[in-house]
Image (cartoon, rainbow, N blue to C red; front, side, top):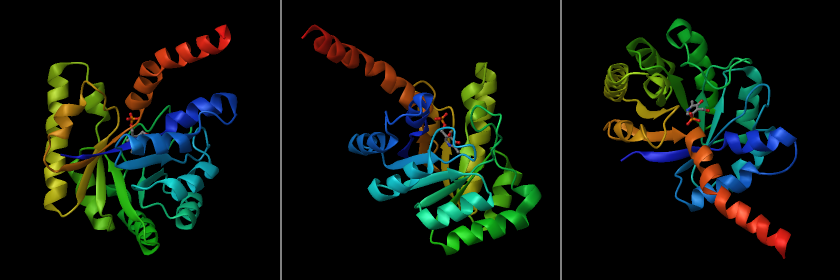
Length: 238
Ligand code: PXP
């Protein structure tokens, strides 16, 4: 059974809508761990649209399971990661204009750069994971960089419009997971996983970790709304 790591970026997204102090992703990390999350993930984006530097620093102090810092392979992020020392760094591609991470990392076309980048993080004691599409070239290239983990991008599976497309994408993920494990890589998966589509991915034997954010935070907003309204109504009517 894979472990579940929870991505708390969208708690920070709600906070940044008002540029205030609530909801605090640090409180969300504590609650997620109390509920059984086996890891906490936060993506410090170059444009700081949701998670802030202060969040990463405080998360490092309070996370008791493991902290996974998602980041682009830039000099700035490398400096911050080596300073903060998350347990994991997951390297992702990043474009300013995208709503969320759109595709996997291009590893195969720049193995030398990625190898040097991964090496510096590993020397700093950080375990490195590469977020890649379910593509054998990218998986094989990931192994050559010295990264210990790959996270297989499940977005195309999650967004498939037909059963046939979903099945095809599922097979790509399952085969990529097998290949990665046979090369000695640890295997995670994530992006777009929700309460409807997660079971199948969770059953792939080589996948030992699932990284899920949007669907959990979305559900939290809805399942928590009833209580939040009742509490406000009680205050208003008191
Ligand atoms: N894994 C990676 C590498 C991601 O970039 C994201 C999104 O930040 C996720 C997992 C989680 O995706 P979602 O929010 O769709 O569950």
